[in-house]
Length: 321
Ligand code: DGY
Image (tube, rainbow, N blue to C red; front, top):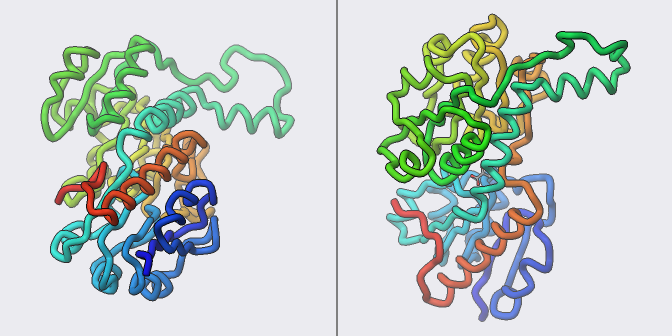
């Protein structure tokens, strides 16, 4: 009997065709609707491999139900949706999709910064709503990005590429990270600061750090109070790193100027969420890596990781616990 692979979302046939030669491939049949947790538990019982999305909660219960489960290939660089410690205990390999999404995600993060700074969404709505009556000196005036200071929280691969984009805009680059990054310092002139100094000195604070127990709720009222009143906050990492009530309050009271958000505590965020009521918020539906090229590369990497583990080889991008 061929090993079974279960894919938790409908993905293009051409991506899975190579797997079908050697494996039984089953797939949740919907593209926009996540698989119910109970259905996932039923499916994992028969699976040798799972191909998962960041929207699935791959907890101890799911992992333990997979009696023959050998690998979970998560289609994301982040893996906070997976209980990696439980997987290690059960001898299940977890893989993610680093590197292939670095440039696209950095592009989106930097676009959010530009869009929020230059009020592009507001301006577009203004034109589409027929509100544009004349050119005027301060019509929808935003703020400059070039020659300002960017503070990058989380100087991993994506952070480094954002820094490279910022260098192209002649920005001063500050960063805060668990450890110093001598390559970013030498190549891009990035300057290491502590978190508080980064908050108070930056015109743009960009959050790119992974979600862990340490980074959860890192951006609270106290953090926003330390930022400049003109600061733009960008989050392209994970929602729970930010206290959303505190952020909404800071944006409403003018504690900070604007925010560009690709991620939220609860995804999809509900349309009546206080953050979405604010004109100075640019909100995206977690599309950091969403270009066709990158999403295909991510899917192909998941396929390769699964094939490697099921054929007894080392996975290409295993997550270490
Ligand atoms: C990731 O890969 O973790 C991103 O958030 C997906 O866009």
